[in-house]
Amino acid sequence: MKVYLNGKFVEQRQAVVSVFDHGLLYGDGVFEGIRAYNGLIFKLREHVDRLFESAHTIMLKMPMSKPALVDVVKQSVRVNKLRDAYIRLVVTRGVGDLGLDPRKCKAPTVFVIADKIELYPKKLYDQGLQLITVATQRNVPEALNPQIKSLNYLNNILGKIEAINAGYEEAIMLSPSGYVTECTGENIFIVKGRKLLTPPPYVGVLRGITRQTVMDLGMKLRLDVREDLLTRHDLFNADEVFLTGTAAEIVPVVKIDGRTIGGGAPGPVTKSLRQAFQQVTKTEGIRVG
Ligand code: PMP
Image (cartoon, rainbow, N blue to C red):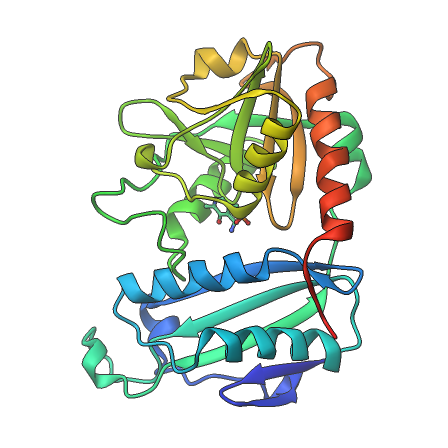
């Protein structure tokens, strides 16, 4: 595998960064995860825009333009002869000293990895996922805004560890007031009648790109799509629940904290949205070239 690192493509074993890189020492950096489907890179511009916004907020000056980065992403898929891929873009503060001071870091580290996509087991999509609410609350936007897709994912990892300890694969994280936020790496939706609801960003969720795609598809399917505060009660009594994310796409949820959701199997709206999603990934996107 060839990896783009600071201006050139190198072999995987040469794709190494310094132990003084602040991405490693402090999680001081930003990233994106992107998918390519059959030679089409899905929502590439949206991901690049979000990366630039994350970088701008943490005052990390991107060392290249958006078109140049788009080009590197396309090349990364091409040089590895991939058609279906999971692409990771990472920009760190770069090499500095052992203090926090970002001014000591003279140049950002940029790397892009295009790897084969490892699909989740089909069983997950056919049978649905069981979730548990965990005690670790989601970061509050006032302290660390989840819109910054930073390399500091400990909040999410702590949530994930709690789910794993309890024998589950994924966790629901709440806000300090007890509202539903998101899972550790996916947004959450509920279906209730013709309503399609998802928590608003101000409660402490990433504005997921898959989340937006699903909201758009929901509107096309004539659902009443809204951002709304959700409680665990709303989840337990929903007709359907599902998660969205670039890697996982749309995952049905059939049980939460021991309560069966709807009929206990993936529901019709989730299935229609999954179909519509697969259709857009086949037809939309930026060609690898
Ligand atoms: N929430 C969090 C915390 C995430 O890390 C991700 C994955 N990047 C998502 C939601 C889903 O976002 P997207 O659809 O843009 O992949």
